[in-house]
Length: 329
Image (cartoon, rainbow, N blue to C red; front, side, top):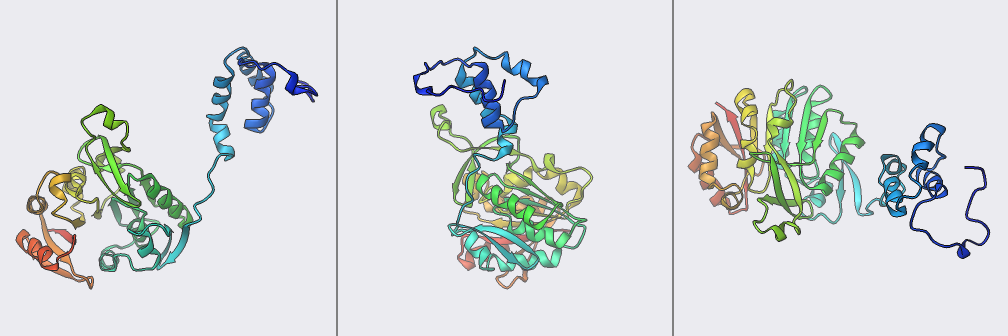
């Protein structure tokens, strides 16, 4: 392709062809990839002259090389802020009434935060099921340090975008982010999200309803964890799917006996996990654990193996959930 090659001085007079010419392919390189083709690749690319022009252009637009130029990257959300907290920084959105605003104000779940600060030490491993925008992931990473390990599992792509940006802003190489739902089996689920919070459920039965669903992958967390890493703490906050998520950790629980910090919303569990709150607590106890609830001041109300005491605490408080801590006996 000689220098100065082009459509001529009156391009509006030229006929339009729906097939690609060698010049079209040359300008795909120049305009889309930002370079001229090299000698080795030109023979193969120019041989596509005569093919459908739309398909030719699409192949360059969808290439990794074009993607890396960043020409189509959306502008950053002006509502996203980087907030510096004690030990880490985190990206939040001012529109996120459920989590982001509380995190940015330094008021997000202080009672659970106090428990994490008491339990975690450098070098420990943490599994965060339902990481949301990553508050407890980043808090954990700041506490376990560079020798520790944190796996964050979160299906909501908007949350994952913020979480991964926060991970990079902190330089937390000890954090791995998995954009998936945590469940008892590998498969697909439907995500119903209200900004950062959301629930996962089985896909609708009707095939036409599936077309309108936000589908996310679901995996067992056991399959995501590197075999060489010990897990000392599992946090499960998945809006009623805690039982499903922990079933996917049965191997990790049996081998490592980690502390489990779980949100407990018995009203959600039958519809999401298919069991009652009582059955969930009995299952945890059956894995060799004793129970406690986290008080508003961050201290623990010990229930030992008395699941009824946890139910009574939940009903007495009159809230939508309580947080429980299960420790191995």
